[in-house]
Length: 326
Ligand SMILES: Nc1ncnc2c1ncn2[C@@H]1O[C@H](COP(=O)(O)OP(=O)(O)OP(=O)(O)O)[C@@H](O)[C@H]1O
Ligand SMILES: [Mg+2]
Image 1 (cartoon, rainbow, N blue to C red):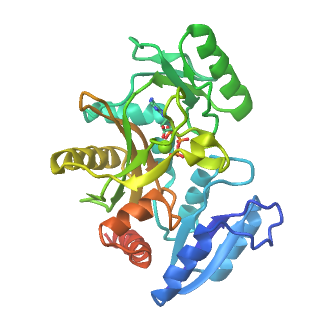
Image 2 (cartoon, rainbow, N blue to C red):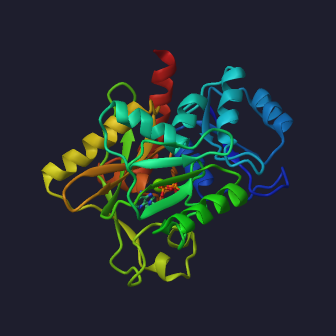
C-alpha cells in the first residue's frame, strides 16, 4: 500500500526534515511490513499540506499530526481537511478528537456511562461558569483542553479560593485556554492502552512509579516530571508494567474500555486513570490517537501483550482500513 506518514514540523522551515523520533520509527515499521512509505511534514502551510497530499494520493495517511503552526488544537481541523480531501487516515476524526480533548465534555459523557471522574468546575472565557457543585479542596487546576501537561506545575494543586483564581487567570492568559479545576485524586496512577473499534480491547496497564519522587511534593506528572530531564521530578518517576492482582487489572481495563467507547475513540487510544486507597477508579482523561513513540507507555503495554512495535503499527493500519470498509 501507498502510505503517507503525516507529521507536524516543529521548525518553521517547511522543508526541514527534523522530525520527532516517532516519525522515522513508524515509517520504518511500515516499510518493514512492505508498504511504500513517504513522510509529509508541515509546520503551518495549509497549501503545502493540500498539495503534498494531492500529489502523493496515498491509500492511507498514518496521522501523527499533533498541532498546526502555533495552534495546539490544530490536529482537529487537519483531520477535517483529510475528510474533505476524501483520504483515509489512522486514528480519530475531528469530532472524536474534540470530545476527548475537552476534559469538561469528556466528564459529561463519562457521567452518562456511570464512570467515575473527579468532580469539577470549568472557568470558561466565553461561556458561563459551570460546575456540578459540591467541590472539595484541594483542587487541581489545569487547562481545559491543552495536553502534554502544559500549564501543570508546582502551583496546580490549590488549597484556597485565592490560589484557585490565580491559577485560573494564569491558564487563561498564558495558554489562551479555559481553566478546569477538579478534585485532587490521591492514589496510584495507571495508563491503559486500548486498541480496536466495535469491540475494543485493553492492553496491560502501565503504572507510574513515583518511588523516587522528592518528599513533600504532590505526586503528579507535571510538566517537569514529563519533560525536564534534569529535574528531581523527572528522575523520580518511571513508567513500569503494572504488577496487579487479576481482579484489579480486569477492573482497570474495563473502566478504560468503557471510557474509550463513551468517547467514541477510533483505532487506538490511551486512558489515564487513578486508583484511590478505597479501590475507586477515576478517569483523568482519554487520549484519542495517543503518543506512539517506541518507548511510550502505549507501545510498552502493547509489547507486554505480545504486540511488538511493527505489529502494533500494522494493527493500527488494519483497524483504520477495516473501519473504512464497514
Ligand atoms: N484530578 C487530578 N488528581 C490528581 N492528579 C491529577 C489530576 N488531574 C491531573 N493530575 C496529574 O497531572 C497529570 C497530567 O494531567 P492530564 O493527564 O489531565 O494532563 P495532560 O496534559 O492532558 O496529559 P497528557 O500528556 O497525558 O496528555 C496526570 O498524569 C496526573 O499525574
Ligand atoms: Mg494525561
